[in-house]
Image (cartoon, rainbow, N blue to C red; front, top):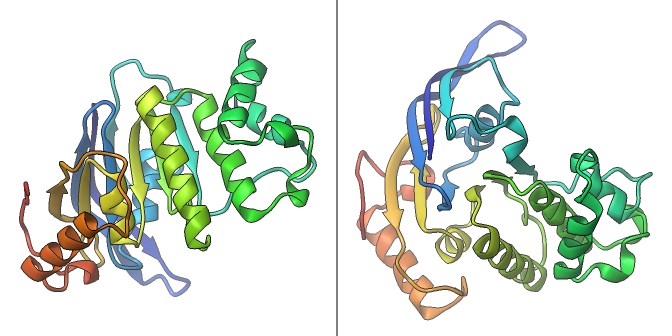
Length: 252
């Protein structure tokens, strides 16, 4: 079980002016739950992931993961693949778990699942953008995380490549059942992936609406079912994607 309470996170500009990014934000996720975070630009979604992942210790916040869970049980996938250009595909994946004797075998299995078995000795610069994201996805799962934080990992990809990566992500998640927090601006993507979508307000960010999804998987973001849910949500909560959802809990 993940529980998060960000009482306040602020930044100061060069002139010393204080900007509050997050305030009184509460979030929880059950073990193995897939949660998407949606909100307007600048509402603090990436900042929230950094706090949860331990990359930002300056916030007035408390983050609880299962008692005794080690820091190594948290994986992170960023907007960019962030691969080391001087390391091969295999070396990039093993980089985060080199101390584990079974690392190479598990990395090989994941790269095969990512359809990258033929490029394990290639360098990132020789791969397409979609292939680099697949390497990053394999690296995120190779530590077998209890919690996986994903910050718009498929942004800027063409629709077919993004769709393929979403399918691979869901397949891996269903096999390994990490708890996932996935940030996206794309509501259709969120509805296609998540068990629950949490909507953030405009800055200072906080959760203003939660929407549970009961549709069976796999789901296509462009399907009629997702389209209907999308339209119904925005009809009930105009301005939701701008962070104006109001204080509500939606179990639909």
